[in-house]
Image 1 (tube, rainbow, N blue to C red):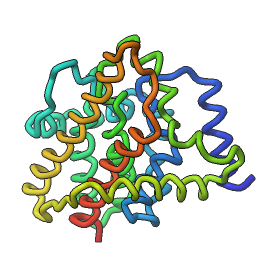
Image 2 (image 1 turned 30 degrees about the vertical axis):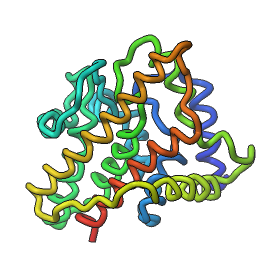
Image 3 (image 1 turned 180 degrees about the vertical axis):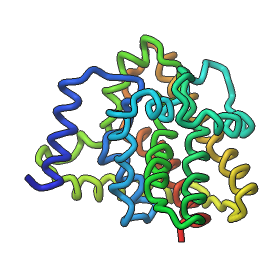
Image 4 (image 1 turned 120 degrees about the vertical axis):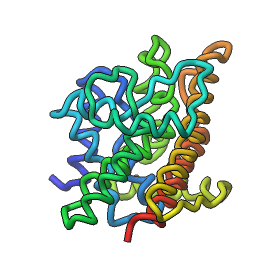
Length: 253
């Protein structure tokens, strides 16, 4: 079986056989498309590794994928940086996605500077940056979130041909994301670690607040809107891809 066919099969069967969990997020092809849209074609498959890790690492990895942001709470850069210490800690049930992004990228830099293989932490960071724009990863895991989370994970994937190969799907989604990126300002991040972390935290907070606001807007609509529009999803993903593009320019040699 070809890799593309196997990935498609796994994505379909997992959606059918396993109930939605808080850590369910954009489907694999969508995560891969964010990386491709950012111009990192060689790293596309790294973006799916974090979800595979959840299968065995459990809460050690799961809590890195979301943040239960209460209604009305504004995420600040200081809150993002404060979460860095919680990376890979299983006791924080509210999650620490924001700090996980910073921590994974710092791990990438540390491993790279010491001659160790740094692609694994980079792969985690790629995935977390995709999760960042997902509205249902930025609101409390209440009844609305539990009921409607899974239906939004593949909202931009379902519009393609039924038998679409994974590579073709990723290319199609990436083109849609790039189109929306054209309307977003270019982000530049410092290449110096301390400055990079502060500037990154500022950008993470901005995307998190936008995603959280959209998530609560869906819940507060009359009647509640249970699904993102395709355009809304693309706009969210473009924010992740734009930030990833900046991260790559600052860190990836």
